[in-house]
Image (tube, rainbow, N blue to C red):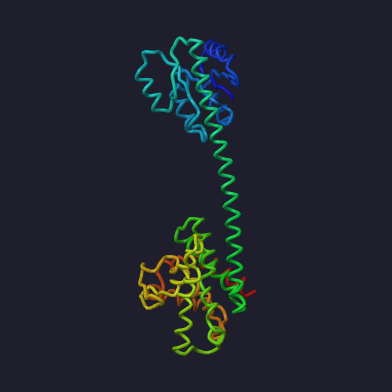
Amino acid sequence: MLALIIDDSEMNNLLVMQALKPVAGCEPVAFTCPRAALDFLRAHVDRIGVVVTDYDMPGLTGLDVIAAARAVPGFAHVPIVMVTSLDQRSLRHQALRAGATDFLGKPCDPVEIQARITNLMTISAAHRQEQDRAAVLAREVAAAVAVIEAREREIIALLMRAAEHRDTDTGDHIARVAGYVGIIAANLDFDPAEIRILKLASTMHDVGKIGVPDAILLKPGPLTVEERAEMEKHAERGRRILEGSTSDVVRLAAEIAESHHERWDGTGYPKRLRGEAIPISGRIVAVADVFDALVTERPYKAAWPLERARAFLADQAGRHFDPRCVEAFLAGWEMVTRTCIRAAA
C-alpha cells in the first residue's frame, strides 16, 4: 500500500521516506504541494494505506488537507497522521475534530515514524480486507436474493396462469393493472423496491376468482343478488389462498386480494372498511383495477372511452376511491394512455 507524505520541505519528506523503507508492503510517495497530493489521493483512493501531513504549509494547511481527504468517498477509515510540535495542544484538538488519526512530533524521530506507520498500515490493511470480505458477502447475498426472487416470480406466474384459463383477458388485465399500480405508487413517492413488490403482488388481486363458477364469472348480463354475493366471496377467498406465506410479496398479495374492493366511503366489501383503515395497497389497486375494467370490453359491457373513465375516477374520488390515489393516477395520465393504446393495438 502507498504511504502518502505531504510536507513543503523536501528534506522532511526524504527523512520520512527513509524511515519507511524497512516497512514491508509500504511504498512511500511524497509531495511538497498539498493540492497535488490531494489530486493524487483522489486518483488512488484504493491504494493509499496511510497519509502523513505537515501542518504549516503554503496554500493549504494540514487541517485543510485532512478535511479534504475525509471528504473523498471511500477515505473515511484511512489513517491520517499530522506532524506537529508537542506544545501545539489546541492544534491537535482541531486536527482530531477534522479527522486526524494520530500525531508525530517535531523534530521527527525515524524510529517513532517507522513504528507508528507500521501499526497504522497494519490497521489499514485489516480494514481493507474486512471491506473486501463484506463486498464479497454482499454480492453473494444479492445473487442468492435474485435467485429467490426469480423463483418467487415464476411461482406467481404459474399461479396466475391458472386464473388465465378462466378468462381469456385475465393475463392482459393483470399486466395492465400492475402497470397502473406502478404509476400510482411512483407518484405517491414509493421507493423503487416498494413499487417492484407492489406491482408483483397486485398481479394476484383476483386469484380468489378461481373459485367462482364460470356461469357467474362469464355471465354476459347483470348478476342476480345471489350471484353478486357469490362473486364478492372472491376477495376473502383470495386472502385465504395467499395468507400464511413467509414471502413478503405473497403476504402483500393476500392483503390486496382482500381489500381491493373496499371503498373509501365504507360501502365496499368484504369488511366495509373506510378511509385509511383500508390498506394503501388495496386503495392503489382499487383505482388501477376499476379503471382497467372500465376501458376494456367485458362479457357484460362494452369498453368505455378513456375520457369517460377518467371522469368517473375523478367523480368517485372521496367516495369509491382514495382521493390521493386518484390524483396520483391522473398525474401519470400520459403513461396511462400509452398503456391503453398498446393494449388496443
